Structures are given as C-alpha cells and as structure tokens.
Length: 328
Image (cartoon, rainbow, N blue to C red; front, top):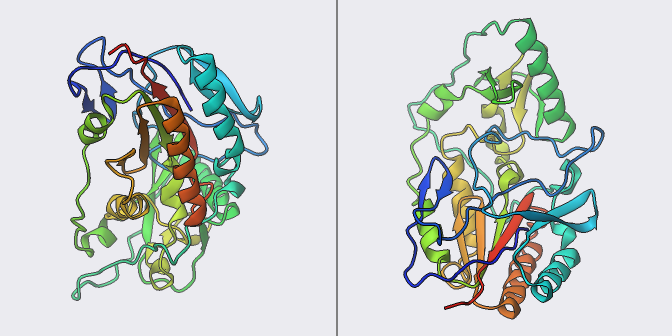
C-alpha cells in the first residue's frame, strides 16, 4: 500500500494511459503509482508468478517509498514518504488488521466461490474440436515447460488430462529478465468462441475518476484471473500438451479470448455499489478514493469487508495508496 501526498488539482486531470502505465502530462498531476508484491518471497514459499502478464508494464510510484510491515519485514508493503505520521498510523492500522486478505503464497489464494462466478465457454454450434499438431520445443524450452507445468499442478491450477478432444500446444516466451514463461496457444479454441463484448473501462476513466481526491489507495488483484474457476463442463476444452503429459485448467487461464471481460464482469459485480462513489476499477486495478484520512480508513474497511462477505478473501496480491495534502 503506497501512501503519498501531493497537491490537489483544480481541474480533473491531464493524465492518460500509455502501454498500461499512467503518465503525467504535468509535474503537479497525480504521481504515478506502482503495483508490487506484498513481500519478497523466499525460494521455498514464494507466490509463484503463474500469470503470463507479470512482465506487462504497470503503474510506477512518483515518490520515495518506505517499507511498511503488515506482519513482519517479510510480509510488508510500502508507504510514500510524504504521508503525515498520523495518517500513516491510521491507514497502517487498518492494513495490519486486514493483512490476511493479501496473498503471501499460493496457499493464500482460494478460488472465488463458484456461486459468485465461473467461466463457462460459449462455442459456435458449428465448431468442431481441434487437436493441434505437436510442436517441437527444443531441450531448454521442453524442460522449462515441464517445470512450469509442475508448478501449476502443485498449486491446483491444472490437472492431468485423458481422452481430450481439444488439445493445444504450449508456447514458450522469453521474458525481459531472460527467463521463460509458458503460454498456451488457444488460437483454435478462441476462434470457436464468439467475443464477449462486455464493456471494458479505459485507464483514463480510472484516472479521471480518482483525480481531485485527498487520498487514493491502489489495490491490485493481479492474480485474480487464476481465482475464477472454469465451469466443470468446459475444463477439458482447455487441455494442452507438453512432452511429458497432457493437462487441463481447473481455473481460468489468461490466454482465453474472453478472460478479461469475465474478470471485469466479476469486479463490476462486486463493486457495483461503490464504483464512482469511493472506488474506481480497471480490470484488476482497484483505486479507493477519499477526501479525508478518516473517510479513507472507512472506505478501505468497506472494500476489505466486501472481499470477505463475497468469499473473495485473499484476492489481493499487491497494493498501494496515494494521498494529497489539501493545499487547495
């Protein structure tokens, strides 16, 4: 949770989205803000980065940050240096009391209750199953694919598949840090599914809606895609092959055509009474906005209570806040 202070704008904002980032058109605008993991994991209990979007550009902080432990130094977030000490204590106390809502390991990431939402595939009537011709990965990528499948299997995201009709190849993509990430080529399955035209907001709407408020808190439900379960009848349609076995997804893989729309529908459903009032939502980016520290603490409690009441606890993997000194 990043908390920082900045001058309040007389107008709404001149911020705009660019490649997933917030970029300031003026120095006095809302500082960019960063989503990061709640702690630096050790090698034995790390929150595995299984989402293929993990290298995508995210919002970055516009000021210096201080670590803020939620449980201990290893279970911590960050707070901006400009926040008043009294406000830091008030907001920090609320965060500490709700530390169990943050996912420290994959074990802290339960699936969203199927009564709330599941991902059910809609296929064209004329669609026929496609089993892709197996592609040769090469030795290095073959081993990485095996390791990644083992991770997914260990955390319960996938299961071994038998007698599948749909079957896709894995595609190994090299990340910016030189490591490989495994994606699934759902080209054929996605072609068989009509597009879900559920309206997606723009990053500009999130920024415009947040501008002008005294305190902002940024919460990231970044791994939430993997908390939405696939509908049981459609799970085997997500089957993919490696050199060692075939698997299918129990949870919604990011590569599916309508995954983004499904997740936005979930967030709109959860926050329908709060969006525009004290919350803005852009897919998995959540901004809590308030005009005073006292109100902000109440707004944060309302958000945290919502996650608990809808059995979406531990959906948060990263967070931060930003606040403005009311000099206007």
